Image 1 (tube, rainbow, N blue to C red):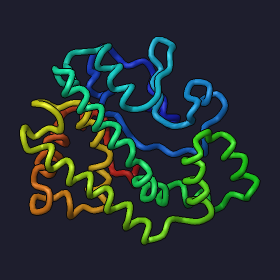
Image 2: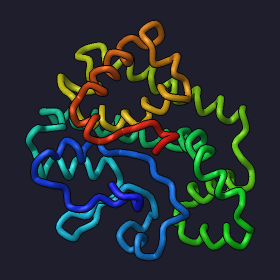
Image 3: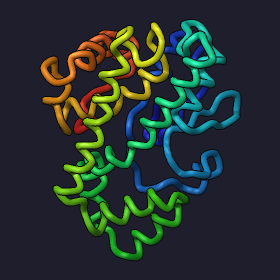
Image 4: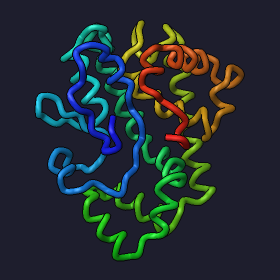
Length: 231
């Protein structure tokens, strides 16, 4: 994935790499050309055969239908519905990651913008919620109390995962699926900075075992999923 957050046509082999290549990349705002292919102005976007798709969960399901070997969705309709519920739940937590992530990269740059520069950049951000996040990081950084509240919500994700992992070691059904993929960027950030002591055998043993299995997968290595502060 390039710095624009756009996936070109995925290859017909090695597609597991594409399904795990979720990284958070922050730029100075979506330009007009990007808004043509993704009106929400967020990442990622997949362009396949000249047609754009956005939203990570949608992209993952599309790739799984287009390249079904190996399968990354459960076999039964009920389990596929559970998988989608996991994706929606995890997507709904993204603001809690933003509170931590943006202070490292975007805040240092945004704090130097003039009011006019900030207003111009906000024009290219269609989402009101994301505009508010940009305003906060540029003019009123999140407080320690807000980070504590965000951290607590992310730890609750680990609690939910701990329960779901009990039957098989995976979030849904008997095998690795898009539900697990959706959780990877969140658990990674929790582990490396936000609450690393929670991703441990004495706190969330099933999550710790799951995380070790995820990191051992060849697709994880191919995705070059390095430390957030170095990416």
